[in-house]
Image (cartoon, rainbow, N blue to C red):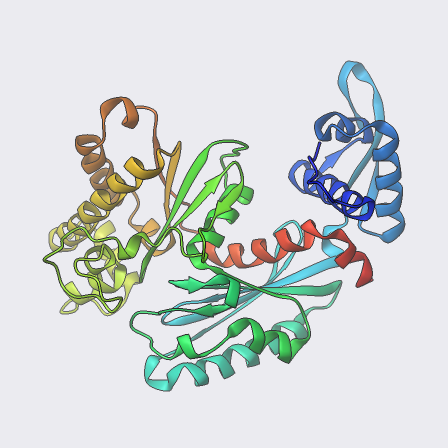
Length: 393
């Protein structure tokens, strides 16, 4: 049951209760009215009224009879997910990815395009808008209600703009939220890529988790982290929590664009790995292929970068004491080689009682959880305000 704040009016309470019911349906997919009443803490009459309203609005549908406990059968209900779509956009230093999703996270259409800092950020923004228009045109059913955008950090989330994108200057002068909202007339939600990836991992990852602290590490061209506590992303005062890529692991190290020295991402980003292997490789794909074939020099370079990442994660464990750490994004393709080096460093440098209660994993490399995270951020905001979905019918 939702606890309300003093001064909350009846309309707000109704909206919060609808949101609670819709989020439970998203999580459980199909369930009965009785089960919703039990898990939500709302009384049966309140659930009945909410469900009737949501069915009338077209937000949920009945599925027919389902089996319950003690052989009882009841009418199942589920979210009418495929009638509502969101666009997810992932902006990275070298690539723009845009996809169309429904409220269950099902992907319908994806488009990608490379970008180059030599073409400047304004040219990349124009390319992004062209791609969005193409994705909108490709939608053949349901209504697109929102756009979610994820970017490298640091990000001023409340302002909808990037504070700094290392290796690609100019984005700090663009307010992505305002630009896209003005162009398409849709709500636009901007989030740091790692934070969005963490929420998508919590919602759609193979291992279900309801409670605890999960750290999702977006380790790729930069290094960032999402701190997810009981399903909620911790963002900090300005939305910049989790910028572990700019945590120093050597105060005498190289100067970073952020002004700091010895930043973690200066040692273990995939951009740094490619520079180290540039005589033999010009893409990450060939690096991972070489790693799988057992090339000693490639393996050594990957292990060294993973060693640095491991020390960064030791600091993360000491600060947040998480249940799980999931390493995702581009580095996930390094698989066991990455995991073995990272866990060796952590095992040697984290208190044994702490390490024994910690799960360290590599995310599935066949899914782009950060792109899914862009959609997840938009979906989460829509589910917080069900009246938005109804008013767009």
